[in-house]
Amino acid sequence: MGQKKEVKLEDISRALGISVVTVSNALNGKKGVSDATREKIFNKASELGYEIKKEEKQKKKAYRVGVIVAERYIKEFPSFYMDVYKRVAQETTRRGSITVLEVVDEKKEECAAGGAFSDVSVDGVIVIGQLSDKYIEMLKNTCRVPLVCVDYYDVDERMDYVLTDGYGGMEEMVEMLVRAGYRSFQFVGNPLATRNIMDRYMGYCKALERNKLSDQQGKVISDRETKGYYRLDVEVPQELPEVFVCNCDKIAKILIDKLQQRGISVPDDVGVTGFDNFHPQTSAGLLLTTYENDEKRIAQASVGLLFRRIEGKKAGGIHIIEGRLIEGDTVRKGGPV
Image (cartoon, rainbow, N blue to C red; front, side, top):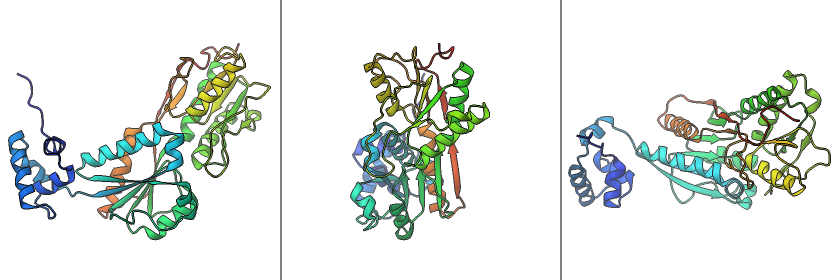
């Protein structure tokens, strides 16, 4: 006989077409739920075999979590930022709470007026991606609830920061390339555009320096404007390095397509690496050599830190979530020919 499946809040919510927060509030005797709805929820919970006492014993409080994402990130990097948001929403739901998404367009980001979540109250806010300094400053001054930033950091003890390991990941990438025999490098990205790219570039430079390849540090091709509503693009230089080290997967794929249009073979003529593992397969069917971020752990850490702040517990600081290197087909295992 198979093991009986545990009934969760989501099962009751799905069966009744009622939000998880309402189900949780009803089962925990909280205000804001009508008697008729509360009775309906208890009846369905009993019908499904839900252990009501277990939930009551945990005494979890439901929160409303605001999530802010810049519109430009959703347009340019739908895989990473939307995946992080979805995982934050899942983690929040797992804890019996809900998320409210606010997408900030370029005009609102630059004007930084009106505040955030003006039409709805939230218990805390998670900001995904780097927004303008002006907008972040506005949030600090107007937002009276705890703040957690993902993929962005500053020096402010009022906030928590959850980061991908751009510095360490890029160090690991360069070390792998050096072991494979590569000695001529070119970094693809604009380190001045975001702190995230700067971290990746600094890790790249540190690994080159450690391997006595400091002369390669200044070979950089920009892929975007320093500020504003940028579009990703890159021009292939006439003189090729042995390997292009790209700050993200999307620009790596754009670069590979342009190289192939010029009859340049990847990885036979030149190697290309990405970062993030958002777009693991190129248009030519190659698996991209890249570094994978752990979105699930990023979401868990972000929600966990925010809840600690909401509950008045000490948090603070920068929290780096390590990923892992993915060795694909876009660099030669034995290095350049």
